[in-house]
Length: 301
Ligand code: CP
Image (tube, rainbow, N blue to C red; front, side, top):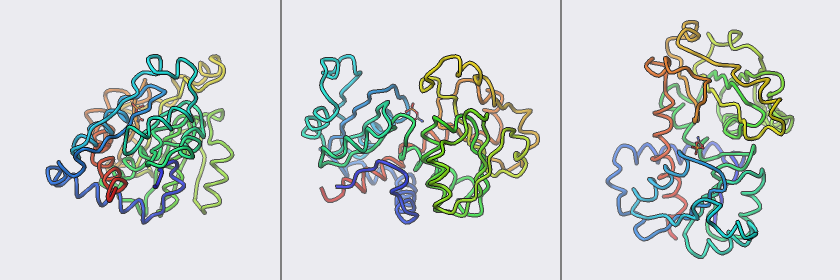
């Protein structure tokens, strides 16, 4: 069975297969209503989530299936000291596929080695978030197209797993990537190395004004407070890189502003009513995209 652990494993053909299928589903969701009747998706969330957990739940239910949810960690046997390996080995017997979110980078890969049902990484620490990337790519394709694209990715590039996944996936397309962050939150060396290996054209900046007018897409991210080893380091960068409707006066009229959400203060609410705002549409795209992915993974089981 295929596990979805990292955007690095997805070829352009894989991505297009999921996005094309998501578009078919979005056009006629009723046609898929009984497609996976009786199938169960196991949810293992060791960290908080609204979008990933709820859109996967909506996706399997809209395919006719249902969830089995471990629930909050403090009410699970993880609290009694059960290991991740034992937990996933048990839960795979209750479900046809698993979605797991965990604070440790590499945990999804490790867990997948213990199970035969497909395991989907719903975010592993500062590592990867490949299903978020698929809905991000779907949203970019719908709004700006995926080739001959100039994107600015701004905020916490060090700890942001949505950034690490998206940047890698974009190397499959003709994309100029600009990364905008405080110096202390630049891309990790390993991610920069991987992007260079893939032949990506990337530029790094500390000021949005340097590139804003050239962008087709601005992808804003939250400073990941929960990943900072030292709260003082967080305080030094908290509140930097905020945009509001005034900031965007210097942008192209066609700019698409995205954010994986949740936001704290990095996009002012006055952006929400502008033509640029695409982040709620982006979150809603999680349902057809995750339906498409689940449909392809569960097909033939
Ligand atoms: N974008 C995202 O992963 O949101 P949640 O943390 O709410 O799942």
